[in-house]
Amino acid sequence: MQKPPLLYLVHRIPYPPNKGDKVRSFNLLKYFAQHYRVYLGAFIDDPADAQHVAALSEWCEGVHCEPISPRWARLASLRGLVTGEALTLAYYRQSSMLSWVKATVAEHRIRDAAVFCSAMMQYIEAVPGLNTLADYCDVDSAKWTQYAEAHRGPMAWLYRREGRKLLAYERHAAEVARAVTFVSEAEADLFRTRAPEVAARVLAVSNGVNAAYFSPEHDLQSPYPESGPNIVFTGAMDYWPNIDAVRWFVREAWPAVAAMDRRAQFWIVGMNPSPEVQALAADTRIHVTGTVPDVRPYLRDAAAVVAPLRVARGVQNKVLEAMAMGRPVIVSNDAATGINAVDGQDFLIARTGSEYVDAIKSLLADADRAHQIGTAARRCVLDHYSWDAHLAQLDVFMLGASQA
Image 1 (cartoon, rainbow, N blue to C red):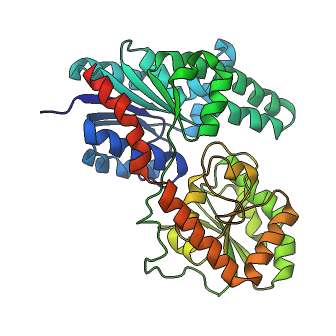
Image 2 (cartoon, rainbow, N blue to C red; image 1 turned 180 degrees about the vertical axis):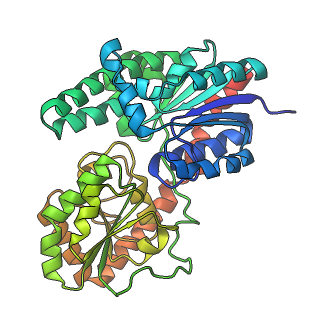
């Protein structure tokens, strides 16, 4: 029997899965492909990703990817100030994408749909009657409100406005969807509180980790020219929360760590480092790598991995991946939220610069403790973060929708 068709709309091409949102949207794609003939519509905001469109045919019956220039999209989004809507909606609004959605739904008689990112729900609204799963992943409106708290002046006003306007749309779009999923129970509870009218259709579907891929057992060549100790941060380095995190760490913790051990090196590993991040490499013991072919060698041979995010929503893949690699990870309260792990056993939580320094010092001074935490971290991932187990929660909704 032929599988039914499914429309899947994603705000960023879900391949390769080399950053947090793409890891989740890609694993959702693989899940959908088991049950549906998937017709994928997505935007490409990094020209380097265009070469990967063809690879998506492994999971998709049809693929429609459109380039989107972040610079021009930001300018275009300002029309939201005139229309009174969230700028995020205008950012991702393209008439050509809308035309493709309408034509594809009509041609293939599509009844079921899935959306990754609330802004893509605007295309679902243009085609009434679809049984839609909306994976919001995080409460994006809360992220913008957090941005406002970290800024001053006009940008604080703009971020605060975006948080308010986007929440209004998230609530509206949730009423159109059959179910709305979030990356953690904490995010789901937050949205239920802010949108009580749709609380019954909100559920948490946690992220997972490919623990066979992110494993310390692989024979990987060390990328470090010296023995270290090497302290590592990983993440897309054009993303403001990551930029803020490494700048804060370098300002509040790194001087004491560097003075504590003259051999210590800090590695910032991730694509598209902003000018502010690149400037940190003026310190010869701070290394900004840019894009790397494989992040695992940097994790496997790290003395410690830090995730000092002051603005974080949902579950941080960077933390789970480092834990899967058997590394001791030091996280902020925000980065720890939503992760089913025990402070002091599976990872260490630090709240201030001095607490990061103390945590790093304790790991460097006691190799056995560092090993124990790393071992417990991997066991935590194996026990609680299987993609197959988490996504199986969608079976009742997705398979039920196709039979409705």
